[in-house]
Amino acid sequence: MPSTRYVLLGDPAARLPVQALVATRPASVAVVPSKPALPLPIDRLEEAIAQVILGDKGIKGIAAEYGLERGELEGLAARYQAAGRRALEG
Image (cartoon, rainbow, N blue to C red; front, side, top):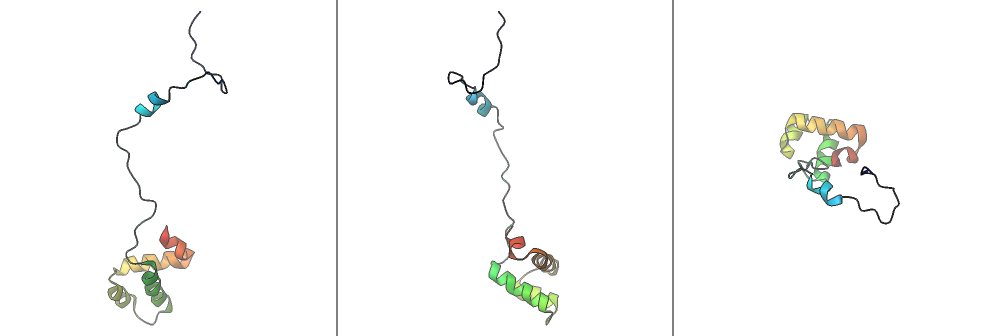
């Protein structure tokens, strides 16, 4: 009788080759951060974004005051305006 390779699910006597499956995984796995790092603490970043939204100062001056690039601050302000604090925190 030919050997078959099937396992009846729920069979208490069945042993699946778990070790063989684990051993075949790649040795190195890339780790992807779950959220991007913020350039400033969230409270300081919200202060800068609030100044951008209020428009009392130029964005270039606000960016310089907080040590950010103008484009970076513009992008963060746009994300914040679209979805609030959660958009910044990832």
